[in-house]
Image 1 (tube, one colour):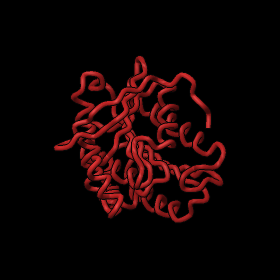
Image 2 (cartoon, rainbow, N blue to C red):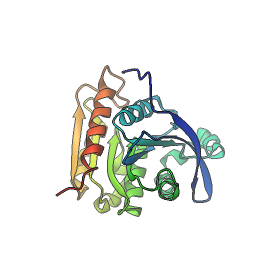
Image 3 (cartoon, rainbow, N blue to C red):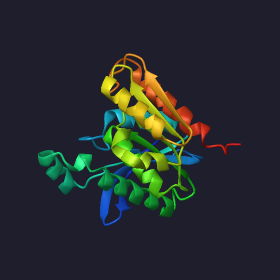
Length: 224
């Protein structure tokens, strides 16, 4: 992966999401027009090296980013034992909705268009959350996502959606193909050759970041 020597300065924030506060890292490039809210996958956090890399690429393209922990510290401790909260798509989606509302109310971000980037189970949460704020969410990108976990909600998604899957992530390819058929919006499925679920192969994550950046930037401009 490319090393960024001068990434946009991040600052830590506490995001009020309904009744809980979630820890987050916020980056605001000068003249940003949109902010990408990240939803990490099962067992991960805002410190995910893969999501942080994608965030830095987006920042270089002039997009603001917010990476948050979807669970509180207490919930994370419970989930380490039970492993059930990471699959509670309804809970995770509600946290994203809360973070979306927080972005709309915050002085620094209230004028920015909001996009979602979801990984693994976080992609399902992003799709469900987008149906709760259809007039707010501008575009969605899923990396190695489990959109199947969004269930019947898929047909109600209004935001243009890009699904990115590794070419060697065979079970997840089928799940994304099925989800693509259910989505009733502008949509695309991109399969990255030879990549596995975590896109750990050389340059695989760079392809993901480039595709995501292009998708978000394309939908920044009003579509004719």
